[in-house]
Each structure stands twice: as structure tokens, then as C-alpha cells.
Image (tube, rainbow, N blue to C red; front, side, top):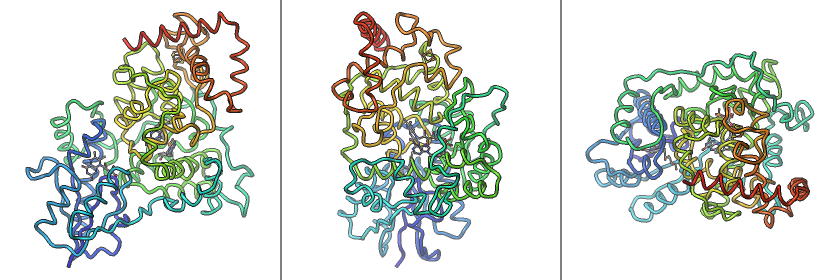
Length: 508
Ligand code: FAD
Ligand code: DLZ
Ligand code: SF4
């Protein structure tokens, strides 16, 4: 009897474990577009176009390769609307020996599949997702009995284990981490290359029409749609990064430039997260370029750390701590997310730029997410659930397993320090150092108080003051508390007053 092999929208690779030993003459592959996955979180329109188009292209590639694929489109009249509904619909009419699926990347979907398994008479085999460097069980063992879970220790262990950028037992270049070389402010003489651009083919155009009709209320702009939508194109996009951007990736990793959303980043997170690219191939390719003398170590190490280090570490944290991780709110923050996160309508130029670019591209690079959008949400005390919702909605690379630990762990410190040793909070001076946003802002980054002052400047100190009980024992914060304590009372009062006035103004 044949096996039913289910492939989800973020498992779009023919090396996915659910296709292992697939009998092309017997087995059936099921891929389904469903309204539930598109709306349980109202994804950015561009993300919807990307996922549905990539799913359709992948199904076509499998068919051309001789697999038996059943592809259910979103607007098929019999579509049940949910992933488990589509599996149930098929097994009603056809007998299978068993169902095989690679473990879903999100807790919610895993639980749905497990609960379907309890209701039906066919067994469901849930296989490990072996696209990652680290299996979930191995992460749990690594974490077991450790006092602190730190990315840097995890990353070094993975470098040793997989022998990546190693010289025997030592890291290549004598250092594990070249971050101190990777904080150069942008040099305006440099030309930033144009991003990989793929024009929509007929399949993508049909999807664009469908998304425009079915999801008019969703956030974001569809056009221009330039993403790769199949493996071949995603490999081209990655190659372009290696040829044109990797050289400066490290140097300008933390820079932000007005009107330059793509900088020297790779723009491959969408492809990695849905399966069009594989993390291992990207890491090994970049490592090879270093050993061949074709790429500098600070760029290569920085890039590899993001994937082998941060990406794998945060996935481990997600599976270690779900579902409780959803409830974290260390600072008991409760402010509503201001409307400007949706509209970009604010006099704060840095925020306005980052939101506007996010709306247009379904992308913002890391430092925009961390030090502008994240930093503001942290220091103004916005409810973590609302911040998570926003970050989940707006980016084409957003999946809960990677979005949630970045937001609740890295930016909001809502997990009380599981992911970060201290909150990534800063005044406007960091944004001014790493960007040219302040040159075009109505606020003045050099002014600390009053209506002209950069809001980050007082919000930062008010955040420290408000959360003294929770933060002052953190030795990495002690310098900042000493600085605050040296301020006279009238200065402290100004900080409180400015914060109150400003936050009231954005609430209204
Ligand atoms: P590059 O800068 O070129 O980095 C290369 C790759 O490293 C990325 O493609 C990505 O796969 C990986 N990477 C880098 N940083 C991280 C990180 N912190 N966590 C996990 N992987 C990382 N990344 C997502 O893939 N999905 C998300 O939903 C997401 N949400 C985020 C939310 C916040 C608040 C923050 C601060 C970061 C978030 N990130 C997320 C991480 C990071 O910002 C994006 O992976 C990166 O901006 C994607 O662009 P890129 O491909 O050009 O990355
Ligand atoms: C993101 C997404 C969207 C928008 N739509 C679908 C879909 O219709 N069918 C599907 O199989 N997957 C979709 N996905 C990706 C899933 O949300 C993703 O596979 C789960 O989040 C993994 O747990
Ligand atoms: Fe942002 Fe402040 Fe600079 Fe304006 S002055 S761009 S609000 S950091």
C-alpha cells in the first residue's frame, strides 16, 4: 500500500526527511494551501505571495521529477481550510499504509498533527527535520544542567563539533568572534549593490491576483515583488550575495543608511526558512570562500555565527521552552503597540524609515529590527504579546520558532535573561553612530530633554528607572545605574515628565 507524505509550506526541499525512500510509483505527496495558515496570523501580503508561489513552483518541480503530487489550491471549492482538514479529506477517499511528515517547525502545528494522529486509524510518523545543524534533543542535552544558556558558548561548541572555521582545536584567526571589526559606520563612497531581482512569472502573477483579492486587509505592499520563488532562483540570489555583498557584510553589518534597506546583508532568511536554501550548504560555501582566500574572515565568521550560532541557538531555546515562552513578560510591560508601527506615521525618522521599508519589502535588516524597532518597543514598555504579533505579521521570514525568541528573548528581555545577558536598550546616540537617520529627523539626537529632544534619550533612562528592582542587580547594568544616580533630581523629574508627555502623545 502507498504512503501519504505530507509537505508543509516551509519544507520546500526535495531533501526533506519526509521524502526519504519515497516510492515514486506508489506514494502520494500532499501539499495544501489553506486559509488557516494564511490568517491565524495575518501575514504581510508579500509573504503570502512568496509562500504560495514557492509552494506551487516546488510542487511543479516534484511533478516534473516523477513524484505523484496532490496540490490543493486555496480557492479549490472543496478545500477544508486547514492542514489537518486536508489530510482528513484525502484519507477518507484513499487508503494508505501510513502518513509520513517531517516535524513541523512550529509548536502549534506539531500539536495539531499529533492530535490528528489520535483521531484517525492510520499511524502518523513524525520525522526529525534534519535541515538544521543541531537536533532538538541534542540542544536539550546541551542545555541540561547549565546555569546559563549563552549563544557564544553554544556557537563555539558547534564550531568544534562540526569543525567549521577551525585550525585543529583553535578557531581560525585565533579568535572566535570578530564582532569588534564589524561595527563600522557606513562610508558613503561605497556603492551598495542592487538586490537580487526576479520578475514574477505566470504562476506568481496568478498568486498575486489571488492574494490581492483574498487578503485585501493584510499589511504591506505586494509590488514590487522581486523574491526568488524556486530553488534555482534562490541559489542565484545566494550566489549574488557571495559575489557582491559578502566582502563588506562584516564591516557594515550594524550600519543603517536612509533609503538603503538591503545594505550588504544576504537576504536569504526567507529562503532558508521555507527550504529553498539549506543552512548547511550556505555555511559550508561561505567557509570555503574563506579558505580559498576569496572572502575576509570578519565577514565569513560573522555570517556563519548568525546561522550556526544565533539561528540554531534560538531554535533550541524555542523548543526547550514552548509553550510557556509565549507568556514571558519579565518587566510586566502593558502598553499598547502604537499605530505608527503599522503606518510609519511618526516624526521619529528612524522608526518611520524602518516601518516604511518593512511595509514595502517585508524585510528589514537585523540592526533595524533590533536597535530601532525593538529598542523602542523595549524602552517604552510595550506588551510583549503585541510586539510579537507585529514581528510575526510583518516579515517574509517570520515563523514563530525564530520570531518569538528574537522578540521575547533578544529585544524585550521578556524571558528575564535566558537569551541575553542584558537588555539591548540604548539612547539615540547608538542610532546616530550607526546610521544617518538623525540628520533627517525633526528631533535632535544631541538634545536630552524637552520637546525637541530625541525620545530615545529620555525613554532609555525612564526604562532603567522604572525597572530598577528587576535590573539593578545585573552587573552589566551597574555602570548605567551609577550614571543615572549621579543625575540631580530635577533632571530625573524632566526624564519622567518628558516620557509621560511623549508616550501619551503616541497613545493618542
Ligand atoms: P543576514 O544579516 O544576511 O544574516 C544571515 C542569516 O543569518 C539570516 O538569513 C538568518 O537566517 C541568520 N540570522 C541572522 N541573525 C539571526 C537571528 N538573530 N536569529 C536567527 N537567525 C539569524 N529572523 C528570521 O529568520 N525570522 C524572523 O522572524 C526574525 N525575527 C526577528 C525579530 C527581531 C526583533 C530581531 C532582532 C531579529 C529577527 N530575526 C529573524 C533575525 C534577523 O534579523 C533576520 O534573520 C535577518 O535580518 C534576515 O536578513 P538576512 O537574510 O539579510 O540576514
Ligand atoms: C506560512 C504558511 C502559509 C501562509 N500558508 C501555508 C499553507 O497554506 N500551507 C502550508 O502547508 N504551509 C503554509 N505556511 C507555512 C506553515 O505556516 C508552516 O509550515 C508552519 O508554520 C510550520 O509549523
Ligand atoms: Fe531616531 Fe532620535 Fe535619531 Fe530621530 S534623533 S532619527 S528619533 S534616534
